[in-house]
Image (cartoon, rainbow, N blue to C red; front, side):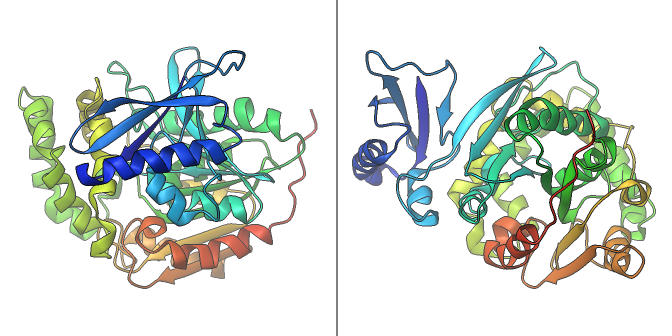
Length: 387
């Protein structure tokens, strides 16, 4: 059984069904499936593709789980270009959701705090069409991946997840090819850590989109702006760890609260639409989402910071920085570190992107693609380590 959720306003649902059926008929992946409506609300319609007799697909295989067909048709060259969303059993304990599409050398996209692989919906088609096999992964605790309530979340957890994902999922399908890591926010820091942790030659290049300083604000206490707000952060920690924690989370995850927060993160107002809000809201409704949020926000093990990890990183490094980022501003310690890095680290490029906030890949994907795609195409092939 396959599923696709299409976010539409109610008047558009009927036309959406026709587009879904046409999309399925033209898709090499879906043409052997029957489509029917599974669930419908005022915000979305969820379609299920059931195998016809004689056609077998693995249980739990989804197509375009996160992405509306409207966006697929708009952002892809043809209606039959799709990406598959699959599951990976990590450590025989947790289900990890990831999307994959395209042909060519592997690229792994890693989202930031509170986000999911759906935030790369504007980038996946462009990267795939450039000649890459794109993997976009939901970090543990986010998106459709498992949300364990008994886990002490740290940056090391996500570093281990990415490293194991490369070894267990990507490398078996790309023998002899190195990977390109592309991360945003904490996804950037996780990508840096995975680069340093994996054997030399595994990673061809690493691209950072507004790298975070750490898992939470405890990692950036050297910034005067953070020092001024420390009393407030400590108060929030106390409240989140109390019985009020779930009440606070319920307020934070409301659509209008998310919309307001995202407007402070994005520089382009029109980028904060209903689709984006839904991408953040839906995973917050999952069992365990509140506990994960509290664990990450209040965690004391901030893990290594960029100044500690960067000296261990191997291979070319591209740093793209939204100039209007309020979370990790270019003028802050992390922004200054990466802006100065090309002068001392060969193979490093820093590019400031105007009119972009903390998530430039979604804020202004055109600017990101203009810099990212040629850089990836020019990367030398990695020399794989001996077995």
